[in-house]
Length: 328
Image 1 (cartoon, rainbow, N blue to C red):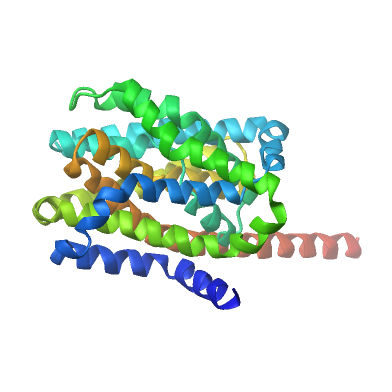
Image 2 (cartoon, helix red, strand yellow; image 1 turned 180 degrees about the vertical axis):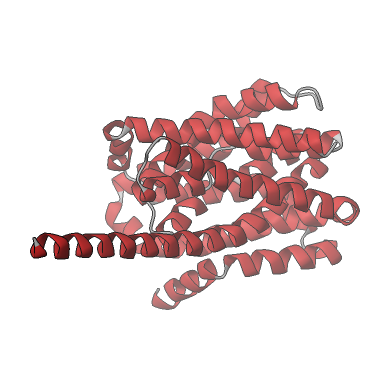
């Protein structure tokens, strides 16, 4: 078990590298990962089940203990990213399927990677986890409605079918994971350290499958979609941080909101796109999966350094104040 835990930690640490490597292989050798496209729904369910097994019923208390913070974060998540997606899809004149894919990424809840990145950024992890849980619970209703409203002009959308898909792929596996964690806590605690390995493998296979079945379209439009995805993600970080500071949140909370808003559950976006819109619409989600792991790590390092500098500045101010008081 120790060796598996070490492997899990190693794979999690270098997840972005593995995702990029698999995406490159799938792009130029589609046959190597085309088979995994058929299992994308199951693979996402595995990731969500793993997330559920790390949660306890007590984790939901913070939602009610800090309702204002969680509400602000969830509202920012479901307004900033959908609006930015629509704006970018319109501004760049994207084809219908790709526009729908970009908007679907924007309307999805926060991703589980955001919790790890918030920790690395020395942000408010508890708030990040609460925001992820809240937006994920709201996703079966909010994601289809926002997608229908914003992407309906580009592509036909079935609200009921999309709602049912999210319940099956996201909510049901998470609830099952929470139930198992509640009933078999000691057993789950022994296994939970290996779950990141399973989740990373699942995410890598999701990306590989989408890239493989859409390789030709990616080669034709990849540069354009990459620019759109990068702008979407980076603007999400910036707007999320700005909202936090505008509402006078402390730095740790603002970091959590920034990262949570910028990092989407792109696995869900990819799976929904494959199921309801076609392989091409899944391209933005697949590219987002690759990019946001890279940008998230960079953002976490930058924000962690920023907190350290501000803490030092505060200490210097306190020291100067103490010296001034002593000389009086």
